[in-house]
Structure formats: C-alpha cells, structure tokens
Length: 88
Image 1 (tube, rainbow, N blue to C red):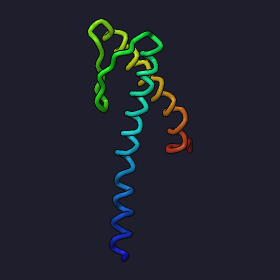
Image 2 (cartoon, helix red, strand yellow):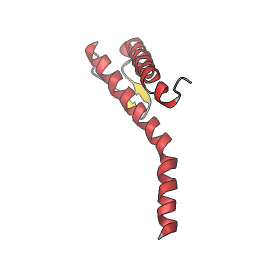
Image 3 (tube, rainbow, N blue to C red):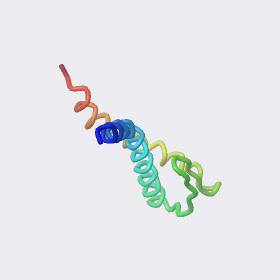
C-alpha cells in the first residue's frame, strides 16, 4: 500500500531529530556517571536529563555535568558540523 509506505517514511524522517537528541542525552548521562565514578561519587538519582546525588557531592556532579557536556558537544562541532555545513 503506497499510502502506508509514504506515511512510514514521513514518520521515520520526523523521528530523526528527536531520536538523535535522545541519544545525545543518554550519552551525556553515561559520560557524566563515568566521570563522577572516577571522582568517587557512587550515588546517583537520574531520570532522562535530570541528575541528582547526595548534597555533599552536588558541586562535583555539577562540574562533571558541565565538563562532559562541553567535551561531547565540542567533539560534535568539530566532527559532524563540517559534514553538514561544508566549507564552500
């Protein structure tokens, strides 16, 4: 059925950006947990892109969140952006 294949294609295209963002959020969460574990934080409370830990570890967690976010997106900027927006 042509209408079903067209609908499926448009749904797949529409799902691309949200799925990409969700995968980046999941990667950021994982990198942040690994960074925190390297700094002896082992208690976490996380839901999607919301991070939590014990009050005594909040400052370290906040630094890890920012560090991992910046490193991850800087890497994307230097690897993916040239592919999407090549120099003329």
